[in-house]
Length: 287
Image (cartoon, rainbow, N blue to C red; front, side):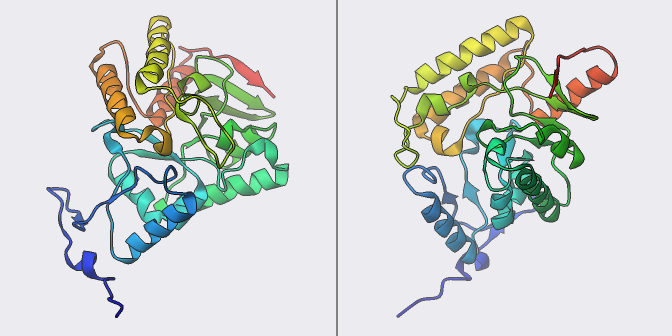
């Protein structure tokens, strides 16, 4: 006998505090998604959970407590799971684009890259009714055409390149784009990645080791008045011990009066205002 549970979670939804939201009583934990559970299996579980009426997932939001963060998502993920994108925004976080198919720009022809960027932007507009302020290229990929293509789609800042430790501008022809640079030093991949699927095998560092690297970079950025951007993937950093370490780090940053902790969209707006006012003259990287 096959039982139909499709309306079980919908029928039992309850109010969530004073938010006005109606949520199901069963929360889907996704800490293992993309890690011990493959991408294909993860999507099957998400689809089934949604079919049963589920509308709450635990994505390790303890990254920032009540701190707003920036979530870079590929367009195809937003297209397949629009309710997830809506939940991220409803929780007060910023959603930005991370390509459409998650293919590095330098592995695409100019035409393919243009199509990929256009599709990602169109999906976000269709799902959330707005454009994306920011972009991060998959695998930190960037081409000679990327600046022009992003500006044409109304993207206001990029966070892909590693050309400086301070915000700067990329310029290609008449197109100019604000760059909030990242660095592998501040990415969790070199710290924790161990993937047989991608044939990537490196010694896994303990959380204390990763945090020591981050703290050293943060201390230098604070002393020099620079920018530090942490890049944390849920399938890497969403392990209990690593999350504990991240929570401690974020708490330290929030309690430090010399540090401004903010999502990239707010930082980009602040930097652009300083540039427009003539108070900051950034480096210009001409393509």
